[in-house]
Image (tube, rainbow, N blue to C red; front, side):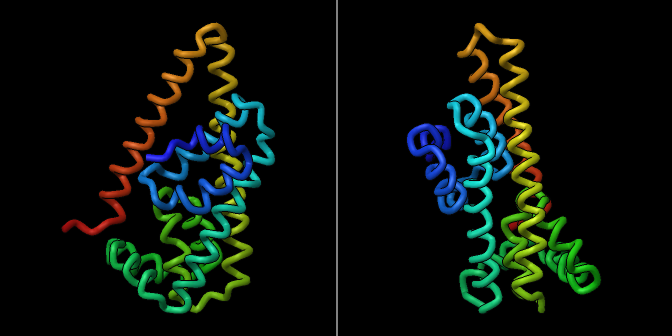
Length: 196
C-alpha cells in the first residue's frame, strides 16, 4: 500500500497533489485520514500548511470534476460505481437534489465516503456544471481546511506533551489514524454499500 508520508516528504507539494488526484482514489485509506495526515506531516516536515492544503484541494477538485463529467456523459464506469451504492440511499439523495440541490451538493461533499460518490450521483441529475463546481468547490475547501487543521492541531498538542519522545508521538498518531480509518470504513460499509 502506498505511504502518504513518503509522497509528502520526498515530493512535497507535488506529492500531496498526486496523492489526492490519483493514489487516494485507489487506496482504502479514507480521505479524512489522509487530510489529517497531510496537516500533521506538513508541520513535521516543515512544509507550508497553506500550500499543502492548496495542493490537496486542487487534486480533490480535479477528481470531483472528472467524476461529475463522466457521470453527466453517462459513462459505463460511473454507472458501475452507482451500482455499488445502497439503492435506498441513492434514491433519497436524488429526491433531496430535486428539492434542495445546493444544500444537498454541499452536505454530500462533506460526508465521509459519500464524498467520492457525490459527483457521480449529481452528474446523473439535471445539475449544471457551474452550480456543481461552485458549491462543491466551497464545500471541499471547508472539508480540506477542517481535516488538515485537525492534523496540525494534533501535531502541536503532541509536541507540547511529548516533546522529548518523538518515536512515541509518531506511534500514537499512526495508532489513532488506524482507529479512525477502521471506524470510518466499517461505518461506511454498513451505510453506503449493498450487502452481497
